Image (cartoon, rainbow, N blue to C red; front, side, top):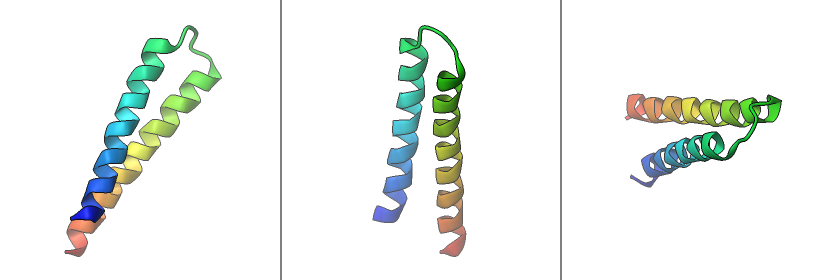
Length: 57
């Protein structure tokens, strides 16, 4: 049970960080896109982790 909670918490935190990044950013430079991309890749990795845990059961 605890193994499946951590990826969900990381997904929620990443979505919150993306929203905060959109709201607080004044200009959309390379730093903005790199922060957004890193959060999106983290979400993708956690989705793959959740799927692999379900397949392994």
